[in-house]
Length: 379
Image 1 (cartoon, rainbow, N blue to C red):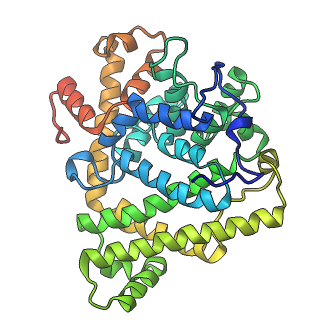
Image 2 (cartoon, rainbow, N blue to C red; image 1 turned 135 degrees about the horizontal axis):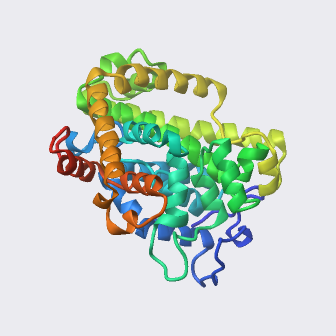
């Protein structure tokens, strides 16, 4: 059963609509339609072979962009319901937020941004919007998925002022406006941002231990994790190894979910917002309580130092950056190596960026080997 919407939630019946008008459907809300379009699109399927921290060839059980997006959606819905927010909108944003991510995680994004620096740069959030607005080709009367304003707004988590100005020129009063007038997105969008952080911190602990790059003993240095490890042991002293890890993460996730619900409820009461429009004029409202925020920050610092900057991870991400850079250089030198639809576009550099950003890890590795004759990563 879906809970009743709070007055400050995004109501699908009051959506700001789609860029191309469509008739409503009798059995699905506008946000349900968005979610369904995202699940069935090509870019969503590609996420299964796009990675988070560990590259696709390094193991079958490490998180991918697809599993990460599903975990964000699950956490988001768990928080949205008790707050009276629009669960379907939260799910749609969560499932779409990484559609524009490059192969090889942030390494690929950084390399592609460097290549595109003379041509406007590359932002993966903006690329996710390009995917749903322009690059998907599923419908006869428009490009993209023609999602609602509210879903598109949530997808565009970050945006440079320069790109926001370009968006505003193309769509006055649209999804770029809030980056110019410094207003907030919907509560559902704010929630997805925080659910994203909660999800990747938890699963990076799991993947980091599974990989052997970090240990449970090291994690005893992290108050947020260690408190729940101790709690798990107190409840079931024989716990050890992977079962102890899973139970500690489960307790940590549950505590963070409850903390966000409680802290956000207090913030909403203190602010007194009574509509979705009032939310946009307010300060950010979806939040951790201060103690949880501080402990979460310590965990992020630990993961940065011990996992993301681990020599093994740095080596593989260095190889990945080379693959993306050399792919870009090869296509720029001979655009006819691109598929015909991309080669025919007048903005060649943006076409190259769109094509590379859409690649999976393994396709990018194979294509790099085809174009350069060198194998830097297993395909």
